[in-house]
Every structure is written in C-alpha cells, then in structure tokens.
Amino acid sequence: MKEAPKKKRLWLDLALILALLILAGVLYFSFGVPKEAGADVVVIVDGVEAARYPLTKNGTHVLNGGTNTLVIENGYAWMSEAECPDQICVHMGRIHLDGQLIVCLPNGVIVTIEGGDDGGVDIFG
Image (tube, rainbow, N blue to C red; front, side, top):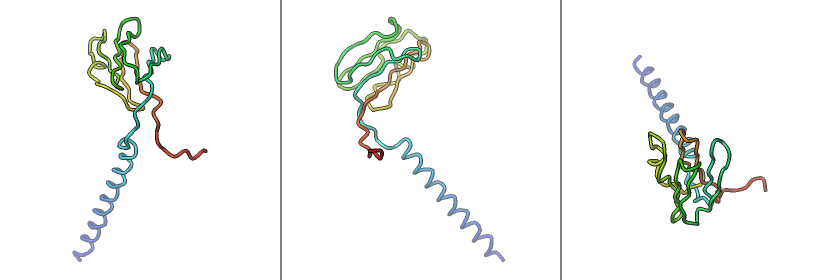
C-alpha cells in the first residue's frame, strides 16, 4: 500500500521540475537574450520626442530646459545631472543596448536607445 503514495510523489516532483524548466526557458528568452548595441539616443520629454542623438557622437546635452544633463561618450549614454530630489536617473548607470532606458519621473524625461541591429530573422521578408 505504501507504493502508491511514493509513485504519486515522484510524478509531482517530475511535474514541478518540468514546470521550473519551462519557466526558466520563458524567462531566458524574454530577458536573457543579448541585445545589440543601439544606434541612437532618443530623448522623450512629457511623452513627446524632444531630441535624437547618434550614439557614436560624443557630447553633453542639456535636456528639458536645464533640468537634466545627458552625456554621450564612447558609445554609452548616461544622465550626469538632474534637478530632482531622488537622483534615481543619475544612478541608473550607462546604457548602450537597444531598448535600454533611463527615466526621470519628476522631470518627465525618458532617455532610450533605439536603432540597434536585432540580428534576428525577418519572417515577413
């Protein structure tokens, strides 16, 4: 009689392992697939594109009337200064991959990287 509960537990263990493997695969393909370096730094202020800079051209740009300062150097972009109390955007670090972004909510500024070669297969020809 003790054989039935052991078999049931074995199947439950296998089902749990399979579910975890599927979850790991989904997470890997959602977040873990490496992205390509982007081509442009896009600045959005209050939901409207305010500026676009090539990631290959070094420079310092004052954004949103002086509330934020964006630095582009050696293929990376980062927020060096901001007139907001928490300074989260300044601490977000450097970005360079397609889809990465820096957000300054108090000032309504979003900086994102666009235009990277995704290197994927175009199924729509």
